[in-house]
Image 1 (cartoon, one colour):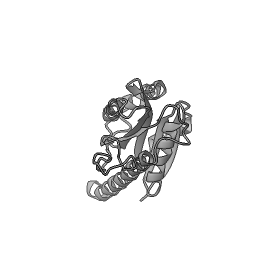
Image 2 (image 1 turned 90 degrees about the vertical axis):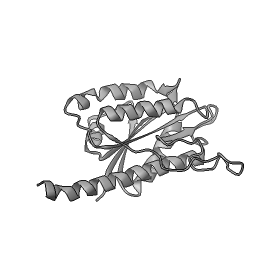
Image 3 (image 1 turned 30 degrees about the vertical axis):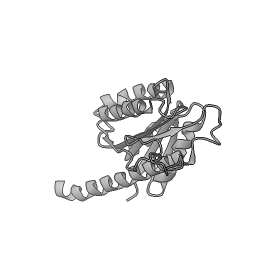
Image 4 (image 1 turned 135 degrees about the horizontal axis):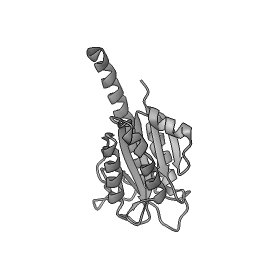
Length: 199
């Protein structure tokens, strides 16, 4: 049973797009993945979101929060919310990127998680030990920024998306994508197992 995963994201300069592609690679080993860039959403993109078993949301962190394009998308989903919580029980996750090591990215992930909660979605975080926190650790460690609510990445402001985010941040994003796909698959199988009992 192959889950359907939608990765919907905004990328102002291309760095968050690299992260989105890494998330999609991680999920793609297990699931069918639709990459949906913002801000331009066509009817087929909304249809992909509707049919997805899991939605992974991504945005750069600007000034301590999500981008304006991502917030516009969030507010555009009020119709989905008002029409009977149509995304209820879909799996959800999030990722973000900023120029600074912290950059208040946690606030952005918290905001995305609250948005998903308002839609009745089931949040999945990152399940990896924090890296780069010992004398022998390096910037190449998985989850080097120590985030568990979602995947974080850091991109130097003066480097192009061909160079940053770091490979460790992209591998961390892949790990999130894989975990979401695995969780979505378990969720689908569990729902299928329960259907005969409820019929």
